[in-house]
Image (cartoon, rainbow, N blue to C red; front, side, top):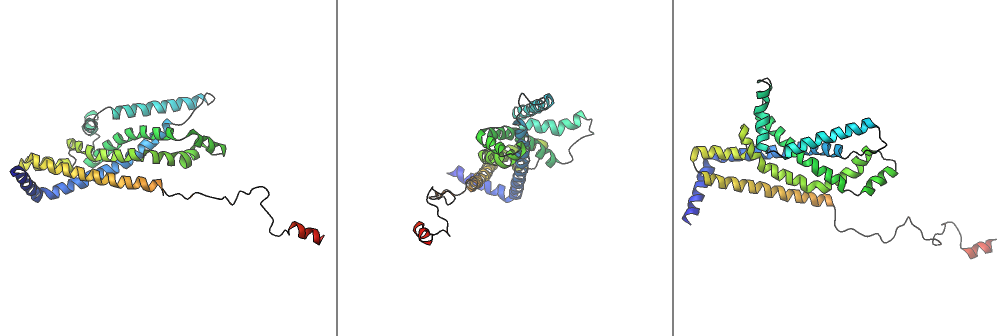
Length: 273
């Protein structure tokens, strides 16, 4: 009990002195995660669509060559950025760029470097998610769209991608939550995120565990709120669950049940004649 009281006291001291730094770090973390996830989704959609462009044996050799080349490039990109840690990707891009160019090329802002690294990393994961989402759509949807004269672009934009987007919404939310936590590795290039605020507070106060407790609570709150909002968005995309079944279709008439409104009954017609 004494230890818990001491922990609460230390957390209070930390928050009183470094609370503004913690809040600024939370803001930077959320902004980076939101922007990078959005850009990563665009990259992932672009790569996923390119990976699913069909070609057949009767297509021109040039078309097949370029499609195979594009798929190979996308595959290399996905495997490299999914197979290496984000912290090393940040080091390679932020410090490697001036190293290989003798200082001629460098990032002017640590924000630009962090957004680029997290966006490209997210895009690599989203590329496979989008490809899987497109493949998961019933092939009959594509066949039906082509049967009514739609081009491949029209089919993707109006039929396939809206359904694929709903299928991969959980993965988009999962990537955002992962980015909220994984942006902590951006401290390696000096990004002022939530974890960087923790390191600064620990370096000045030597209260490592109390500060780590603040970090754990902060990250948990951010991820729980994000999960709640994303589930609400998924339910909204699903639409209403109380569908009303149609009992009668007014456009479909059973044979023998239709009578012209201006036509007299059969007996009256005979009397008129």
